[in-house]
Amino acid sequence: MIKKFLEKISKVNSINLLYESKKVKDVYLNTSIFPSWIPKDIEKHKAKFLKKLKIKKVKLKILKLEIVENNLKPEERDMLFYEINYKLAKINFLIKTYDIEANKIFPNHKIEIDNIPYSKYNKSFFGFTKNILNKKIIEDFSEVINYDIYFSREKLIELIDFAKKVLPKEIEFIFWNFPNLSHNSWKLRIPNKVKYWIKFIITLFFHEMTHYFRNYNQIANFTFDHNFSDYMDLEEWIALYNEYLYWNQIIKIWHYIPYYDMCYITLLQDNITEKEKQEKIYEILKYKWYSRTKSLDYYYRFYKFAKIWSKDLFLKDLVYTRWYKNVINLIKKDLGAPWGYKSNYERIMAWNIWLKCLKNNIVPPANNFNDKLYFEKMVEKIKSMI
Image 1 (tube, helix red, strand yellow):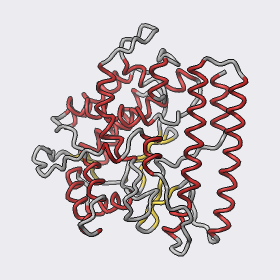
Image 2 (image 1 turned 120 degrees about the horizontal axis):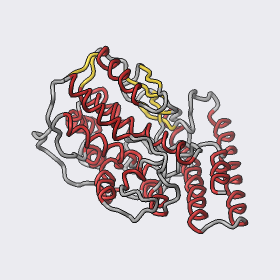
Image 3 (image 1 turned 45 degrees about the vertical axis):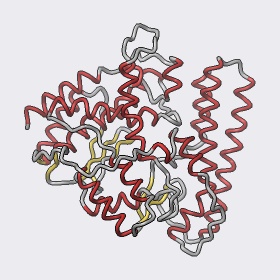
Image 4 (image 1 turned 30 degrees about the vertical axis):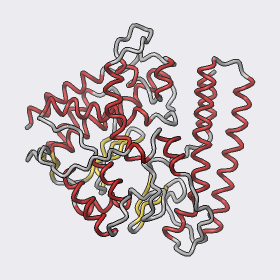
């Protein structure tokens, strides 16, 4: 029954506002509003876009009535309501921010809604507001270790071929002309370079492959590929956990540094110019080995879903700080799960679930792939090539 309703919810087309954006000139645009093209008639586009959103709202509200009429367990009903309410919140956010996105590329386009409660949406989507920013500005980055270890493109391909032999399902590794890694629909897109630094190698084979395993396990355990609305509660954080865990087994690593918190604090300052903010952000992100160009990219990316140079910011990037420690604590605990599983790690890796599903033991992780075996093999292979 729960799968039937999840399939119906999924058919209300995905609203991908939280993480997807594309750069046009110096601004990042929401791809849910402007996917692959910029309309010539912005008013006509707006009317058509808002009409589609209103149709989605009606479909979701009808689904709520259907769920009430069925005899579901309270925890299942609550989970489905959460899914629907979350999508409704995303629709409302898109409606309110449409004019802001349009104004970035059409400066004469009027912004009709100017009092968007970003704090409310940050709380709804991520569980936090600007109040939880890590206020400690680190001046001394001497603990950051810069390893002069690089892999050639040929060596990277050798590692890819080795990984494919261990992985349970074919994944396509694609080289593309963009600076960032991207993992989606069994395709892992890799920046096209001549050589790759050790940090990139570890991120690729441990962080990104954690995303892959959670998606694979979801289908193996649940037979249905559905990303729960706030699966990000665990997604980036378990990926970061694995990245750091196995990084330490390959080479020494420094402790976690809240880079993005420091960037947001910089953006919120009133007494410096935008040029000075850009420079300060570069001075922070260069310790993540970002170039000036990439740091400037991030400067503009921080303003996605908000007016350029405003103080109302969408705080997606703070997920890395808040939940890395929470996942560590969660993995250390035993919530008393049935089925004889001792580790919350297995349950987190089981499917793209959110924290409440995890606590309610909705689906057992019986068919999880043994990702630890893969990670151990990759550790040994990478160490042998350094």
